[in-house]
Structure formats: C-alpha cells, structure tokens
Image (cartoon, rainbow, N blue to C red; front, side):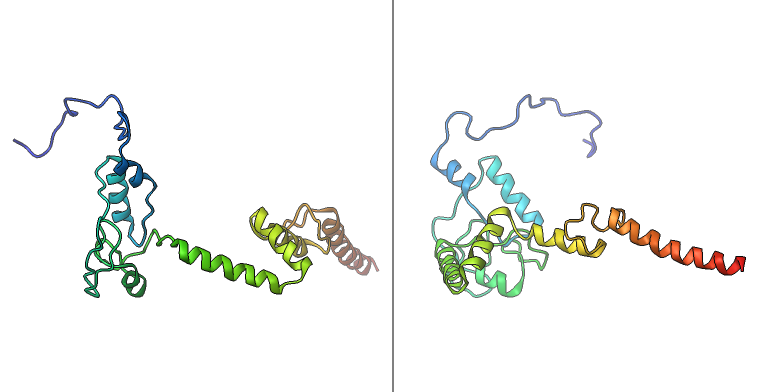
Length: 192
C-alpha cells in the first residue's frame, strides 16, 4: 500500500465532535474550566486538543519534577514544576527552551495578596488621585493621557481632533504663516 492517498477519507464526519453531547460528566466539565500555563505553542495546542475531544485526564496526585526531583508538579501532562519553569524559562510539558505562550494563572492566595497590596497603595494616595486611578482602571487604562500626548505633538491645542497629522486649523494656519512669510520676503527681495 502506498503512503500517499489521492482520494478523500471514505467516511466523512457530518458534525463536529461534542464531548458533552449526551450529558456532561464531572471530568469533562472540570477540564473545560481548568486553566494551565508554562507551556510552548505546540504543547498548548496538544492540551487544548485533549480538552476539546474529552481525552484530558486531570492529575490526581502531585508528580515528581524532572528538574528538582520533588513532588511539586500539579498540572496534568507537565513534567516540570511551576518554580523550575519560571527559573529556567522552559516549557513545563516538553522541557524545551522555547517561548512560553501561556503563563501560569495566579492562585487564589496570590490574587488576595496582590489585591491587599493594591488596597494598601490606594490608602496612601490622596482622594483625588485615588478616584482618578480607579476611574482610569475602570475605563481600561490611560487612553485620555495618550490622546493628550498626541495632541501636544500636533499643536498646543490639547483637544486637537487631527492629532499627529498637522491638518487641524491651528497647525495649518501656523504652517501657512511660516511659508507665507518666507515666500513673500524672498519675492520682495527678488523684485527689488
């Protein structure tokens, strides 16, 4: 039998596979919501495939890390623990030194610690700065500051709608005044 096939597969799938088509068991529902990290692109795709085709089996007990030889691996299909992955910048599944696509999600304890530090920092701010910071965090960052910065590049008008293009009324009048004064003085000198 030859290795290459010229025809399509005989039995085509009419519908995509759905792991929870006939009811969802506990393992499948946990696998859907389970977050993982510290892996390269190839390993991420493999784990996602296992999740989507109901092949993912979660780890029941911690495994031994291949780097530090301690029972600290808590993610399924990983060979290297989280601390070793972060130290050595390698993939937690295959162990290759490639770019890590997914970073490890924060544990609830880390999230609580970070939130407490944020609240402590808010207490040190004045009321005006605190409200400004919370307002910018709610809108998604410093969008207004970047717009003002771009407007400053264009002209002194902070609310310039044509920022960065030099086509607003204030900028075009400045450009015309500069070119008009240079051009008229050259013409006057040439006529005299």
